[in-house]
Image 1 (cartoon, each protein chain N blue to C red):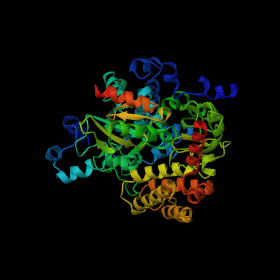
Image 2: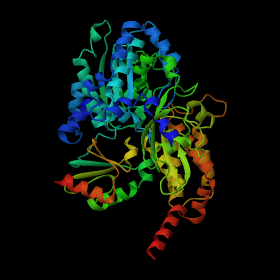
Image 3: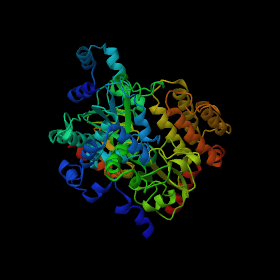
Image 4: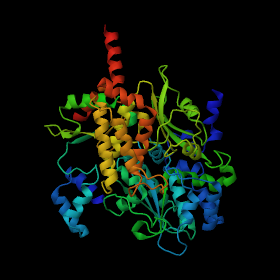
Length: 448
Length: 133
């Protein structure tokens, strides 16, 4: 147990510290400044060139916390040197099923995000930043808007920040309900006022992004790391996490655990430790499967896996957004597969045929299996449908659509079918869900 | 998009007249405005109830009993959960995809704002009563 408390101790965490220490008012400018907010920004403006900032973040090894895990410093360095205007766009459109860390950060520590935004804007020499916040986030929007307004009144946002030559204005754009807008090029289309549908790449946003100007899109958790890296340096940052995944990560743990919630732990913590940190599986039940990185991630059953970008990639899945959904032995995996696929089908924007049609057929077959009307060949049919969406062997990993939504649906479903073939078969042979049938039998026993 | 949100706040839903008005302001045809309005799930293109109850039916909420909550709401309100509105115009019931509150599963949202955590058939019935008054 002492080992577990060490994982989440004060010394082992920094992103969540302000709101762990001051849960009542961590979101106010007053509390934020009293606990060091905007000191890193002032230090960066006074002592660092934009290039030095980019080099610092490259040296820290910080990787994007939105899902793709791309090195943040490298992303910044793709912006052409002499093209202006350029924009920083902040992805606060959290929608990956199982993920709820960006909402918590936005509601509880908006000034950490805002300070990160200003540091990033300084590094890429952007004078405008747009925060794209999910339409369903009411409290988060109000807290973020208040933070921007208060910071502006205090001379920390807008022209000549803190009395220096650095200027950057920050605007908030509210989404209106569309998972696809978390994908960065769809987000840009939505920000411009269109239907949020992905763009063909290249050109990448760093070259032609918002209004065809160079644009960097960063996730809010990524940005919240920046004040700490500027304050303490890249070597300090690398004392957390692994060689290829430095730092800590906010993991959203949900499903069958005693204490679901967000937990900040060092990257590389094992999946088993993480489940224990969240109180373990209740009711004396055992583990069936885990979604390690949001609905897009292939499932795993091995709890010894270290939660780092490289270890999960090597295991054929991904760290993604850090959403861990735990399923115990009472879970019907066919039902979960149906729900997962129904989600991707519902959120497919309809632009690319393989994703629009593929997810629809996958969903139809899964609904039939789940209701006990499946056919023996359905398992193979599902795998075939998955392969039709995924890139051919040896082809570049970009799949057959403009964005990875369809790939995600296929990638996760393929893993479920491959790990639990006998459950798909049982649904066909018994003509109903065996898990639910077992539950009903138990309930009848209790009544009798 | 901010104008569509404003129109919905003013009229309760996004009317054809509002879309024409937005088109006039922005120099767009109403078809171009409709293209955007119809893409996003939070814009209602037909009248909705005074309160919209959106119940998450995604992975974590389902594991924690979302379907029981949805069924109970359907029975209590006498509507389906595919966006139907009660006859008295009080409630619209819809299913939502992940609301980013999986630690509060099963959860729901009222009027795309207030989140309600760890719902049960009992607590959801109490919520409906509270909203009615």
